Length: 362
Image (cartoon, rainbow, N blue to C red):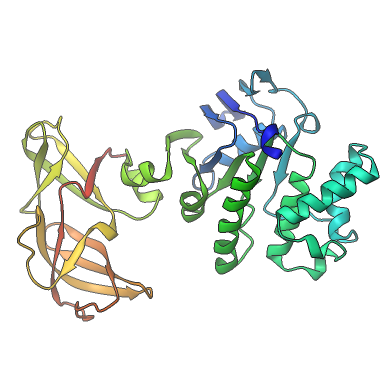
C-alpha cells in the first residue's frame, strides 16, 4: 500500500533570500502523514519557492526541512524519494505511456518483472490501464497529466509534490480532474502537497490550506474555517469574494456590537469591541439576501438600487448601490427569481449578525 510510505513533513523557520529580497520569510508548518495540504497565494507569494525547497531544487538560506525526524534540508532531490508533478507534463515524446511511467524505476535499477507490475498498478490508479502502448501525442491533455501522476506514484514515494498541475487545462477538464485528484488521494493515502493560485482548486480538494503573502503564511486551516472565518481583508478578498463595510462601533456587549456606516446601523455577533473603534466587516455575496420587500425579521436590512447583474445559470450575481455604504455584490438563486433584472430597480439587502465577520485591515 502506498499509504504505508506516507510521512509527516515539518518545515521549521524556512527562509530563502535572493540578495536582499526574502522570497520565503520564516515559514513554519507541519503536514501530517496522509493529508492533502495546499499552498495558496498570488504570484510572487513564495508558495512555489517553498515547494521547490521541499523537493530539494532550492537551497534554503535558513531553516530546516524534516521528513518524520530525519533532517533532509541539504539532501539532494534524487535522495528524497518524493514524487513531483509539474505544470508541464514533461513526458518523453518518443516513449510510450508505459515507458514514461517505467522511467523512474529503470533509473533506480528495479528488475523488469517488478517494473511491469508496478507500471500496471500505477496506470490502473489513474484509469489509464488500457492506454499503455500509446505515445503522449496520442493522448488528451487530461490523459497526459494522468500519465505524469502515474510516473510520480510508480516508485512509491513518501510525499507527492504538485506544482500547479492543472493550470494548463481548460476550465471543464480542470474541474473534472480536481475530483479525480481528490479521489486518487483518498485511494492511495499518500501525503500530498499542492501549489496553486486557484482558490476553487484549493477549496475543493484540500484537507488544509496555507495562504501565503509576501513570503509568509498569513493564515492556515481547513477550507471551511478559512472561508467562513478569515482574519484579514486580504484573506477574505483572496479566498473567494467578499464585500467590505467600514464602520465605527457605537455599542458593544459580550454577545456582539452595533456599528454605523453612512447613516446606517448594523448588528454584528462577537464581543470584545471598544465603542468608537473602527470596524471592518466582511460579508460573502451568497450570505446577502435580495428581496423586493423589506425583510422585517432580519438583524441587518438596507435598501439599495441595482447597478448591474450577471447570469451564471444557477445564480444571478447583482451589484447593488447602497447609499452611504457603496456597492455591494449579492448572489441570488436564479430559479424562479422574482427580482427584476432592470438597472435602478429598488431592492432590499439583508443578512443576520452571524453571516458576516470582522476582519483586520491590511
